[in-house]
Length: 260
Image (cartoon, rainbow, N blue to C red; front, side, top):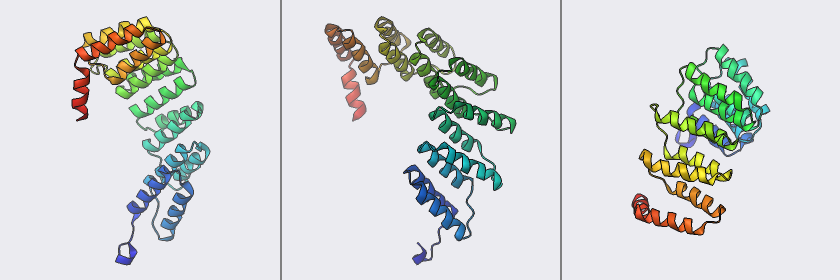
């Protein structure tokens, strides 16, 4: 670039730092940041967020925290994106209490706790088996004016199913049907898969039948889940019946047209 008299700016360096961090090459990314400083370019919040995320991807949350804290020392206040990266990393490594500290810190500093923040924490709570806390956070979202999106519901349903709370999961599906955000087939897939994994085949088969009543169309993943359940039950004739139903519903034709 410089041969052609084109000098890299902060944006150029940030793209390079971000790319290196996503590849797990933190040392190289830090060298690029040093080069920025030597050239008189000040790293900004985008630079620091890239480094924090890079450490998060490597599960090195103590190093991520050092960068996070250094932003404050340098007068670069962490953004909500910075907080969300840290919270996601702490949740992934089961350091949920540290995630909660940042969560409360955000509120104290007047940061808007958005849907991403809540969804990440809800998933983290389920991961460490703190179901009541997950439920409390989910309810807190509504009281704070943050509307759960499709991803939030997916995370919540997945957590409920992995802990065997299918009755609550079904109630949530029903609640979604009466809200502005109706359940998608992916939400049914989560519930079906959870039931199959728990050996509740009859409940899964009943829910599968209800999907058609809602007007939704089962996808390939939905059928694969049901095939798995049927095979687990040792019912090869039922598997063939389901395969025939896929043919009757023109599933294979619709799928091939979609692929084309």
